[in-house]
Image 1: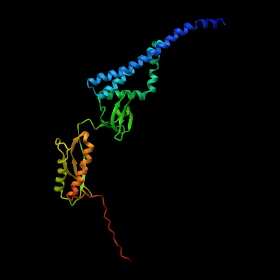
Image 2: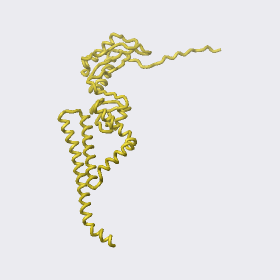
Image 3: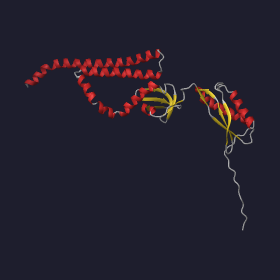
Image 4: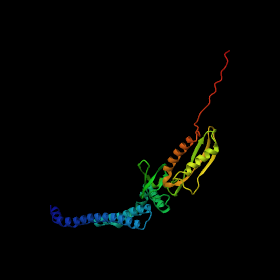
Length: 274
């Protein structure tokens, strides 16, 4: 009973002391989280003013937020009486185990750093990597967000992208369209070649430099094949391809140049009756 009375007498002082510590800890956490968001926005704003690549801006801004938030957590724990020095020692001792447990995450983090440094792709580029293709929307610390042409969002780990082949379709300003046009063996080759050239000369998407190529490439089983290789702006690739194919078909039809399709001739041999 005496001990109980003693605790009751000390209760107001304990509540006042530790209650204030908890209140201050909550305030520190709220302010720290707010400052982390401010650091992210400020970093983004300053880097955008200097016209730094969006990929770098997103990555650095996320890193700034993470650093401020970690310091906030440490300060909060210190306020409620946790020995932060001991905490750091414990974290260091557990670093190996955590590192082994988070090999994938650490690999993704390292790959994210490499993507920012070497820039195999940037925000806005259309790429094909890790078996997927899409426009890069965001590169974060651990993953890359891609948007497919049919408006699906794919989140891929950075390591899977960096550990494979990356095909960047937006890296260069121009792209070449590769078409193979087959015509009948009865077609006039010179006329066919001129018709194909006229289509390319009259198309607004085709660039004059580099010059296009129209050439006979193969005497196939059922057709004579021409390669048609015009150059267009990277952003015009698909509209140009669709339009050129349509114009070639219409031009060949107008000039009575046949486009063969696979066919098979069957000969029936009659055997005289016994």
